[in-house]
Length: 194
Image (tube, rainbow, N blue to C red; front, top):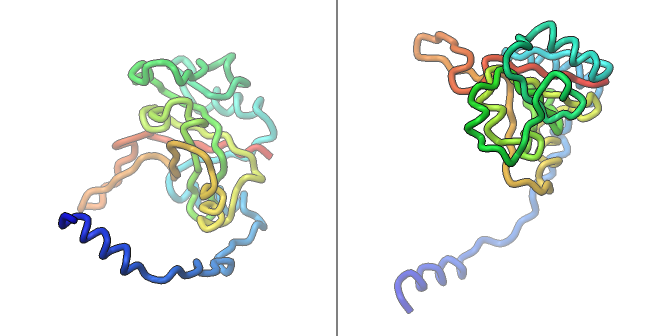
């Protein structure tokens, strides 16, 4: 038996007893006004959100707030009349000039403004990070109050790549000069479908 095997054997012999995970039900949030809470928190972290009735309202707001003469990509087939449909098979480098990316999100977290996205929703995993402006469409009933509930939802999920995105990219230096879009989108907009 070599030294490595001796160490691994010693580690296996000295495992702590198995203990139950703590009950975290006391951290559950209140679902009342989750949409309003999400919108308020998201605004404080630099994002914009709109409560909309349907995709037609999303289209109208996109035409109003974004430069539609530049390249717009989407994963939503309902928006393919004004945007290019994303393809997972295309070389990701071809998306370097995307002005606006419109994708669907799984759900949002009211307490911190984050949106949960997986590669399946992104189309290409680079899209939410390389575009100049990011727009995410979610349903109002998908908003969860806290990260505790969010982690319960994603814990048993089957995905290869996923992440929480909370607002536009931002960074600040020691002089507290805030810079938006330093390493990601300049703006982030969430359209909440009623």
